[in-house]
Image (cartoon, rainbow, N blue to C red; front, side):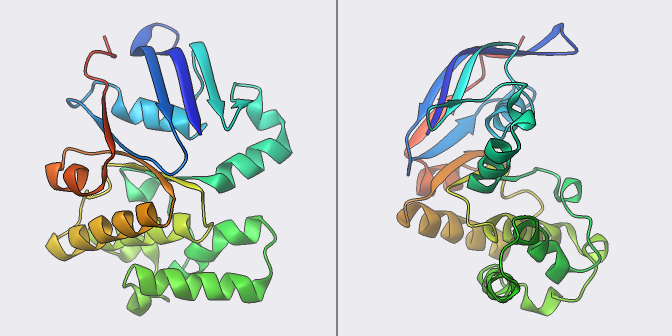
Length: 219
């Protein structure tokens, strides 16, 4: 599904964040991206999600080349971002609607999904993340852990083939962490591809088929 060959990435054309990374992730695989803070984990996840593009090397998704020109191909870009869902480390980076309900519905509405199906997906995701009681709340007024759950709900409402998550347990209490661990296990069991960066040995041990270290990538 994800195939990186000799990928390097430079911020502002000169600060190396990734150095000659080669990584192959099969459909249905669960991969933990590990390494020290500042080693390039977030950069790698952003690249997998098509938010940035290789400075050198190649990235293909399901056989299609992903480059700086990809966003210009509206049909491919729209399909790509439906199939690959990204949960940011900072939930505030992806929450902007007036209510949790509208936040979860936003993505499906951009895909012109039937409104009755959108309502079903919203209800299902509210139940799945145990945030039904937050339906009418404004996302900006929520706690960090609540925002985290809403961010997951927003991504899962699109029913992506792959879930990419940066530090998925950040800001969560013990109950929230268990919910996410169980969620990842269920998604993995259902055949979803999962790629996540985490320092949590519990999450990695419970969910990951493979660890990929980027400790030596950044300079």
